[in-house]
Amino acid sequence: MDNGHVLEIRHLRKSFGSNEVLKDIDFSVNTGDVTCIIGSSGSGKSTLLRCVNLLETPTSGEILYHGEAVTGRKVNESAYRAKVGMVFQSFNLFNNMTVLKNCMVGMTKVLKKSKKEAEETAMFYLNKVGMAPYINAKPRQISGGQKQRVAIARALAMQPEILLFDEPTSALDPQMVGEVLDVIRKLAGEGLTMLIVTHEMAFARDVSNRVVFMADGVICEDGTPEQIFEKPKNEKTKEFLARFMRG
Image (tube, rainbow, N blue to C red):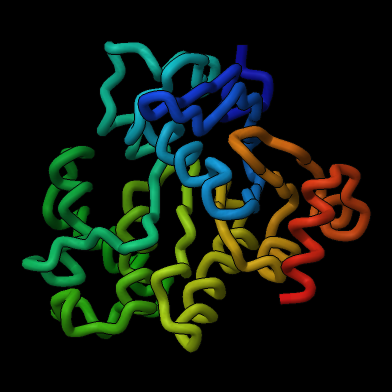
């Protein structure tokens, strides 16, 4: 029953103790969608992404990947994460490995690729994000923007079907934000399916074909960038955007 949705989220709830962070989320991702999730801190955006990537176990509800539930106990999480990759706020690179090795390790360990093939694939994606000159550097020798570009190359090297970005620029100095957003913009232009939690409103407006606004653990509004940014219907969306436009 693959109805064009790569991913479907049904009645997803997530609580930490008595704090319900996600309250009945329904949401689907189609092939080629670039969806930006916006909303204030604490609205549940990052938790939603972490549930989709199985880094958090939903309290209830279902996540379906091509119509198959992935929230059961029998799921091979690393195989699923190779298909639904994630780029984190804080890069999560291995500090003791070179840039090249960081991009190869998942391919050799999870995808069981030969060293030669892993290296060729890693080089292809490092080239794509402009990091090929730095293959022998360790993470501590490169800037935050460069680390994030390596982290994107590492995720791409697994050839995922969907890439999740959790606030990919929030740990960066302002002058490095652009280089990371440019890479994501280029990937969007190539038709990669992406789900991006971001507080960069201009970027969300330009790069996505769909914007989801979350507040207090629910999806308040979901539409095209034009609908959300120019004609928001929900009061909470209007307030949030008004704050942003002033800011």
